[in-house]
Image (tube, rainbow, N blue to C red; front, side):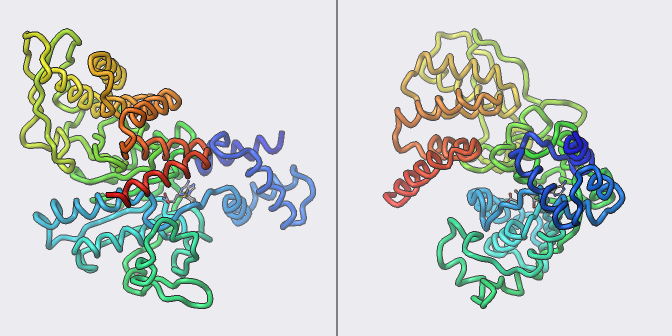
Length: 417
Ligand SMILES: C[S@@+](CC[C@H](N)C(=O)[O-])C[C@H]1O[C@@H](n2cnc3c(N)ncnc32)[C@H](O)[C@@H]1O
């Protein structure tokens, strides 16, 4: 009973949805704090919590999930580099690129951003990175910049050699990179968080929304919209991309990149090109192939024209393109229907099954999504996109055994190339 009251407090003060984490974590954290404080009764501990901000912070340290590592979901960092080289440097080379990493945990994420930006050719003086987290312990660790092997998983050995110095305490990150990040204590569930801060060109908000209750998720999504410049890029965790599908954000369609851009259409829930297609109409669609220029950012808007001729091979392909466009616009049910239509005519298309899987996942139908990815892999055993989606999905479901096997398979494929 008293634990439920503490759980309600955790929800209202830090936005934590207790169902999003293993229930034992909260029980253990409370028991640990009671032992540390020498308070045997939970009712008295609750009283202490309500009286002491310091105790509150100590309990929060016990329930947060600090898991992070350098270049987590690496393709997002590659995409950031390409964005800087192909878009930012060509138009804004003299400006300062403002980046936010929230939550930054122990610093691996903002430091990976700093390294990626340096490698993309930006000068340190033209980079401003703010990194925010609720955990003061994490922020202190981030400022120290000393890391162990666990933080380097998946990174090539030269990475450590390039940017770190081995010390007795661990690998010390070089001063140049450490000096590029400002660490800030902040709580995203607090309405005062980042109030009055100017917008950022790039925001990383990864692997936190999944732990938030519905109201805090919604408020945070509103805050992220305000915090992003109109041309900005928002990176999310893999499991969080579905949250933004029916919003004014437009997904970046690039394999293994979980990012959104802001729609330029204000006051509308949808981008400009959402004339509703019907299944009986065949449509010709000219899509923009540049992943940095999503539909509403493109100078050439998508063109949808009616074509009443018999379905040809070409119009079949357009069906799939239209399905992709609808998925990008958040019209997931229509996208799934078109995709299934396409599959009934083209039952061996791995590409269509990958798209169907993405759409199913966006609708929260994880097992159906997994089935679609499996079908894509069956049809095309080297389909890296389907393998990656499935690996990330299994990882998020806690099925680490299956995920590991899939990652190994992906690595073998990459080596063979
Ligand atoms: C799983 S880590 C994610 C770190 C990094 N973004 C990544 O994806 O690797 C989650 C972080 O969220 C922080 N956190 C939890 N609740 C928060 C809140 N209400 N406001 C700000 N940070 C919070 C935790 O302290 C923890 O460091």
